Image 1: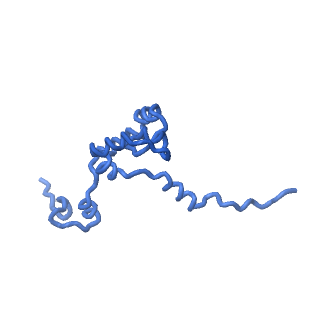
Image 2: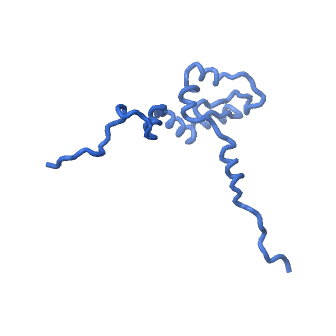
Length: 125
């Protein structure tokens, strides 16, 4: 007649999903803005020596996305794509500084904090 009970396999294994999310992690935006987009470093990244361990022998590299591509055609099509354009748009915004992060957490100085409207009276005429 066959089995009547269901199989007890775990289809939603949390550790497998977490490992997949961090496996192909690229550089953060602030790392790219401060280091890679500097003209000296950018020239080095675009003209890398041959590396047999990297895709395309490290000859086809997108600096903004920090990705290697197999061929020049793949790199050219990547530059025309939506993912690259979104990344470039995100890189145009200035990176957060340490002072801004501390002020957002409430650890910054009181004198340097932006003007707030809390506690001010508005007179309606």
